[in-house]
Length: 387
Ligand code: GLA
Image (cartoon, rainbow, N blue to C red; front, side):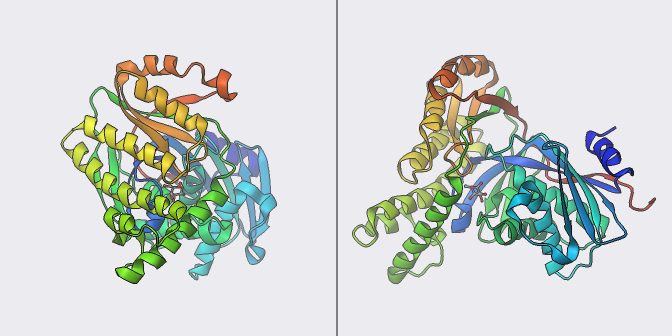
């Protein structure tokens, strides 16, 4: 039996009516561009979270996390963010969003189980939000498109949990296509899929295991830097987001914008350009160019946007030194989390040898995952009709 189903039965004494699954993601290139209305190139990975739900007759909400062996409770009329509810705030946020849209929901027993590495910047929380949202959508027969569902999940994160992230994590978790990456335009939420048929080449994720404690506050500061920059740039040339500016605009603003802020903006506008070029390179099956753009992206995140850390820089450098590596960069918000590396399959053992000293130097045991570009969220089981 599906482990989440089994756990649900053991916990609540009845089978779930619905089980939904949603994947984590890795961003191949295009970092810190989504909240600047820019371009991104993510793919979903073959790590997922599953959410099983059965309806209750009252207005109580019971949450059970198999992975944390932890239980939380709430009720529909008193639903609010509570710090001590930690992981349960994500599904609570989704329920609150459906509520806000005027959807009438009843009490629910909810079980959560997943294998996305936690706190690694692979969007385990976005996947939990999306899986919960899809399960509830199906359970109550709610009409909502895929893009809208991703937006609802982002709103849960932004407004209920209170973390002001962009849209990319929820969007790719809901809309990814197996075997493909997605070129996403975060302003218009338009996208297209690009096949990732890489013969003999793998997408390797290395988990630095560095706890990314700084990520939240520094993320908010970067967003603010970008906002300030747009405010100043828009005096000379109309625009509402960094997406509206070219690198030359930012270069010409020397003296107008504090240097530390200007560097950040230069990263964003150049990263947008790199995403476009990377997508074109991939279409031509030019992995060498694609890899070089990944490397430039890392340098820019390290030197201009300043979201890297010694551990990530070390891992990326070792990858760059390994024969058979096309490119490597930090992925996600930064300050820890993972690197993503485009590598010939046969070079993986050599890369692993190159990073052997990591644990001795930094004190964290890294983990390496070979990831397949995977499909977005789906319903695993629906027993709603027969219940
Ligand atoms: C986090 C956020 C995303 C995005 C990345 C940086 O993963 O959740 O919205 O901003 O950081 O590219």
